Amino acid sequence: MIDRERRNQLAALIRRYLDGKATAADFEKCQLDNYISADQAIYHVSLELSYYSEKAASTLSKQDWDYLQRLLLLLDSNSTVSWQAAPYRLWTQPVAEALLVICLVIALLTGFTLNLFLYFIPIGLVSLLLLFLQSPSSEVRPFEETVSPFQSIADLGIAYDSANFVKQRYPAPSIKNNNRSFLGFLRADVSIVFVFLLWICMPPFLLLLLCWLGPDYEVQVHPT
Image (cartoon, rainbow, N blue to C red):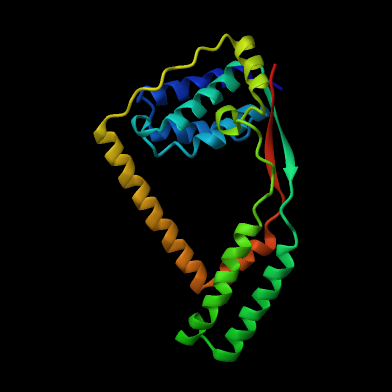
């Protein structure tokens, strides 16, 4: 089902964002309106936009800019979206359950003291390893970085021809914008390190997540 009116509204929001005219409130309203849409293309693009809602368009890399252009192409064309299950390696779940039981036994034997965190550190390191092993092992498609969310260059060409789409040229960022972007990445790296340290010292939280994670889904774009 193609909801042309909402697709046009969402495409207009992306273009306003690229022009530096969209606000965080615009993104919030977009998410509330479109997460319940029956048009899966709108739902997918709305999810992707949540990543950019706190980033200024002037700080986007060329890769991000080109990806947003392909999302615009998806909305402007009559291409549809479906979801294909990409199951996790389920063998990691029983291992996580066993480690969780070990954590509970250690907590009962030692009590909630500082020594408990020392015992948790090796389990936390193993839990982080399981987290990376539990990622889907989907095969990387040729030219994936330059065609995603489309499946191939041929699919991209079909959508271009049907929509008469003209890609907006990437503006070269200024030195000032590059510095601000670097600081943003630095803050993000510090936050990730903090989360990893928390998981290492308190692995039961991560193990609970690993025990209950279900299958992941991969987006499939069908160009028309």
